[in-house]
Length: 387
Ligand SMILES: *Cc1c(COP(=O)(O)O)cnc(C)c1O
Image (cartoon, rainbow, N blue to C red; front, side):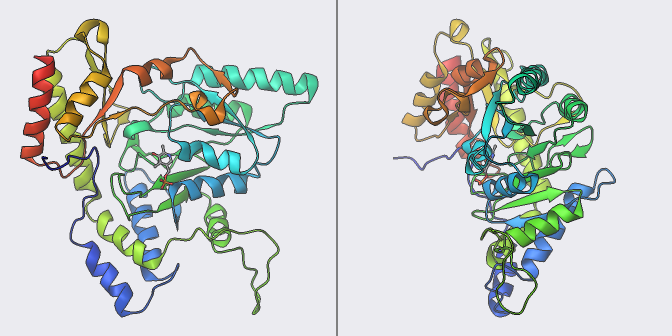
């Protein structure tokens, strides 16, 4: 059996071990320490670089934990409603459920594949009317757009709706570290945003995440809540329920080493994307997730294509299986959350664009450490099928 080509594999720089070693030598083996503070500063410096931003960050155990704390801090609770992009991973949706609130799922639009502003506004108007009439439906507490595969959502349009109806945005930027909208980093737009450093993300700490916000009090509150909400007293005293969500100083050491190469990783992922584009250039029936114009800069964490079986004569599943035979991992796009058994019967607004994307879409191997040999193997399978 040939060696497996993963769709997105961790890619260490070699600089991580220096920081991890330091944690051991100084015995900072705890969910606090110099690497945690340093990693938070590194991320903030990166996000604040291009535009004159002032965000701060709190390093946490996962992106899901970051989204959960965001929901807690907004006061999302039973009976409330949160508007969430349906086309996403369960890490976006689960924190809403942890808080006992209800999700209204919003469709994608065709330009970015992310939250459709039109469907979002329809959903808000519908729920506000119903709320005013019957008072049976709860209040809309947040809007959660996602930058899928690194592609920025239509942030300006979504921001306008957020302002118009006074509903805060929680940005799921788990896949979009190194992406920009109008030269401003993804993760700096929402009232709060979540980043993820899970094993397959553009940089990884093996597992981890961060909460990002322009508002210092949000970050201070996140640090407080993620360390069990201890009041300032010599004994253990609690006036609030907290969580054990703080990142460990050992893990943050990996993050510090990864931040040194983040720019390079974005460049490598974008080069992968270009290679696939060159290959498929003259092949009818295959299209890409595209940057709609120069306002959008994707880190192209994953390269995603759509295969139109009416033109190619075969489906995305045929392509996925052909790659699998050669031990090459490609994955279908996220299955829309409103189609998941666990969310059966939930409200959904839109035309079903994300359903069509799911049926036709495939994520190609996109790791920043793919070798020339790997690409030869991938392109030889694709050549067999498409040429
Ligand atoms: C990875 C991911 C998350 C969750 O991050 P974890 O660190 O795995 O908890 C949330 N949303 C999206 C879109 C993701 O891809």
